[in-house]
Image (cartoon, rainbow, N blue to C red; front, side):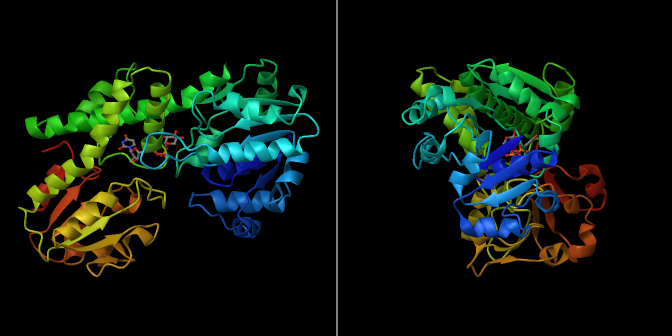
Amino acid sequence: MKICMIGTGYVGLVSGTCFADLGNKVICVDNDKNKINKLKKGISPIYEPGLDDLIRNNYRSKRLDFTDDLEKAVKDSQIIFVCVGTPTKKGSNLVDLSQVYSVSKSISKYIKSYKLIVTKSTVPVSTGDQIEKLISKKVKKTLFDVISNPEFLREGEAIRDFKYPDRIVIGSDNKKIYKKMELLYEPIIKKGAKFLCTSRKGAELIKYASNAFLATKITFINEIANLCESAGINVEDISVGIGSDARIGSRFLRAGPAYGGSCFPKDTKGLVSISDKYKANLSIIKTVIKSNQNRKHLLTKKITKIMNNKFKKKKITVLGVTFKANTDDMRESSSLVLIPFLLKKGAIVKYHDPSGPKNEFKNNKNLKFEKTLSKACLGSDLIIINTEWDEFKSIDFKKIVKKNNFKIYDMRNLYNPIELKKRNIKYFSIGRQ
Ligand code: UDX
């Protein structure tokens, strides 16, 4: 099929490249010329394992192309995916839909033959209705349909998640469309993905409800971890114990720092603003947002305790500063609270992240990026493991720190406390003694 992806951010670029890899002819559009030129050279603007190779292969095979010419892309395509950003409006829970509406207006100028317009961006309930209204100002209703097809890709696992999703959700009020989308996703459905069809508004809500539920699950286990720490219980036993109940499920029950990233914080807020609009009180989600925010500060209190409130001139190493492993994404990462806290307390901070140094942490004389793990840890008083990269999982700490009495605060529970205590290392973790 001939497909156009509007927006070459995370969703558009990964989905477009994967659709091309399935044999479709895909044109990715972005108004950032610089980005388009880089993509044509096979340089991906985002960090995603495996994506560069997939882009190059499909570009060479002429199944995938990039352009800033929206008019041509729309005219040449049968299906148009809207994949632009839907950030939170500053100072509120509201979703900023300006990019979605501006793209919809532009599309409407170029529709001359039938087009299927698919919203992949995460958009509040009834945005599809607004897009349809907007386009029908210029285009006859028989020449287009607007449907919803949310994505559930995780950063760092996006290609795998696209190719082997648990489900594909199609939201359309015109049932004839389901078959068309089933055909597009046929190779993935054949591998076992569930194909779920619902109303357009239903699909829009499924996306928000999924992310909010996962955020709730994480927040739940994080609060249980707090209880475990006070009561002397191992939170991992609790995760296995409750997760073995098929009704609960074992995934997303890893206690850790506050959740972050481009989706959970944004979409939980977005869901609250949707519920406000429809006058429904989603008190659980409101509490989740608050609890996750508090968690960032709660963990800094724990660090104060670990350090006996003595930070001045202490050397502290932070391993991993992104919101999770296998990404370079800093959005809503708990390190954005953690590192300023350590600096304010007077510590000398070094950080190492396999995805490289970060602009957020530039220009501070007490904060330095180290290229290697061993340099970052050398002479440290406290090592904080903030993300779960594979290279952080089997460090010989004594060998690389080269001093006595250092402490470790493992916020991802990567190590066995008994083993480290046997080696006389002062080790602290989440929800474990
Ligand atoms: C998420 C959703 O998983 C995905 O379906 C959606 O499309 C986009 O948002 P992503 O933001 O890439 O994906 O990251 P994810 O792996 O879900 O993790 C989000 C946050 O939760 C991270 O900060 C992660 O460290 C944290 N997390 C996740 C936990 O603390 N514990 C867990 O058990 C799982």
